[in-house]
Amino acid sequence: MATQLNAEPRTRLWRPKRVLVTRSALDWAHGRQIAERVAALGIPISQLASDRLSLDLPDDPRRAYAEAKATLAVTVASPSKRKLQPIAPSADWRVDLAEGCPAHCNYCYLAGSLKGPPITRVYANLPEILAELPQYVGRGTVTSRSRHRSHEGTTFEASCYTDPLGIEHLTGSLSALVAHFGAWQADVQLRFTSKFDAVDPLLGLDHNGRTRMRFSLNPPLFARFEGGTSPVAARLAAMRRMAEAGYKVGLTIAPIIAAEGWEEAYGGLIADIASALDGTPDPDLTVELITHRFTGGSKTVLQSWYPGSALDMGADRRAEKRTKFGAIKHVYDAATMRALRSWFEAEIAAKLPRGRILYWT
Ligand code: SF4
Image (tube, rainbow, N blue to C red; front, side):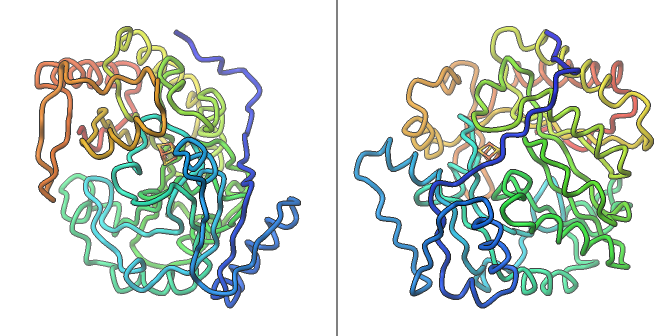
């Protein structure tokens, strides 16, 4: 199944219906800039008298979900949110510019990790977030200790609790972070992954090779589960543009879905990735392979958000795995995992010889 690589990229920029700005957010120049960006788009802003977000969502769960997903809140990251945590297997440390995402992926991992209504919170106190970073350099516990990845320096992952590119037109936070790493004379690397193609603001930045953007991809057969994201062909075109702008690029093939037709679908995707990268300058291409999984809690939340979704979260071909926090994850069973893994490793070696698989999970 071939993706329409020559299709005109279509960027769907999110336009929140409701924007709330807390009182403290306006104390920060970055918060005021976000409010100005929003106002310039003609989106009305509610300036709150305090830092308390009163969402006042409808009782009906479907409408509450829709309203929450259409809400942007400009807030201040608390000291506990600014404290970095290790984030295996991607990076040494997790740095959050925001929490929540406006897209509607039927398998979204945020359903299991963020509590409460799925609004998107963006942080105004960017200088305080940036000021935390230096103390973590050289203290990496994930990639820095990996024999194969320590050359990446201390790594910082910016897409754990959000898709930072999907909201960049409203925040400018990702561009500021990329520029910060570009100017930072240290052995560090910024990493983020995205299902969006709106890379224009990033192309002209002085990134100095200290940022790796990975594109989160699934074949069109499964991208139907990724409502509100950029079309796959547009993401591939954006990947080429980022590579041509000198960025390190990579693939996050996730979540890998073992539904009928997966071999043909992923075979088409990998062929399209090879075409999209043909002739681009940096031969280093990282590949992260993440199979579909869910917890009992995330399944309940996702089924309430997306009733009737065709995404399979049944017990068939599943096994249970305990997380380090003691929760049970439902992953594919050993036979399915083996079949998927050997197929992906062989296909990537054959079709993307420059691809360096960082991990399989
Ligand atoms: S783009 Fe990522 S963070 Fe956003 S809804 Fe989809 S899976 Fe969740």
